[in-house]
Image (cartoon, rainbow, N blue to C red; front, side, top):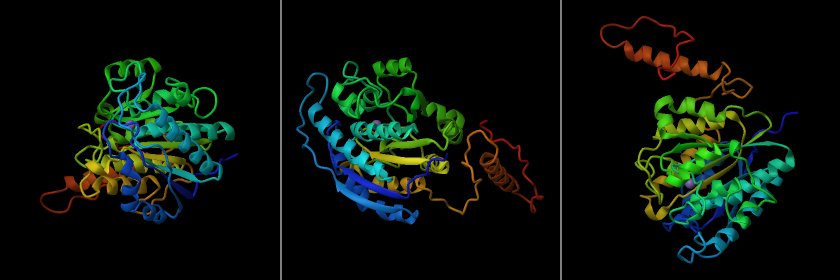
Length: 360
Ligand SMILES: [Mn+2]
């Protein structure tokens, strides 16, 4: 039995809070994404959009750490509201798109997605696009900010109210996670990531094998029974193209690398839910980071430059022949063209199917 593919109706859930962050301002993220044309971008991809407006919750009291956490009661309240809102959209067969807000909100959205998958017998794969691993606990976090802890909480390491937000026990298992774009990890956190065996594709990995191979590996094993959740922290992107975030880290994916990432995710046809978090309009320049996030979301939902004829099966059927071959053909014919400079037209050259890209 084939599970239905990606839902065709998206529900926008604004969560205007920076309760888990150090810098203020991510609370303005939902409106910045709307102003940048998110709804229109989704409509262009042939989907319907329901904008649920913004959830309500406590203000940010800007207090110091207490018992290991900053603002834990408020973090719990916001995440409970988001959990319930996300569940309702999933139950109605729609694709919840959470407009953050800081990344502590991944607890509410992903716990709801995990619960939905449990109840409907689906597998879950979570792609965590981020400069940071967000795998701190109160014991090892330097700051106590919960936006550095959501993955640990989801995997069972955190305060009970967050760990069990979606029912008893941890929401997810570490082996369902793929972390991509990582380039800033606290020392204790790095040890914990290693202990728990998280599958991390850091920037060095991307430098060495390229985005295409990285994504092929991160998406491997996804099938028709998989619900794919993308948690897109805008600080994943290089700060040169995305200055509007509170925790910029040099050396992130470029514009084209980020686009390829999104396009390859779209090609799976399995996207079921999405978070867009940590966009901070107070630090942005003329809303450019919001506009870029919207562009990338459009690619994630299937925008392509040309009509692509991909195999009916999952196109990046990861490891199978097909789309990768075609891409090799494109890149090798481009090389053939650029190599043919100088006198006269270059001889026609048919790229061999087996012409492998240079990084493989
Ligand atoms: Mn994050």
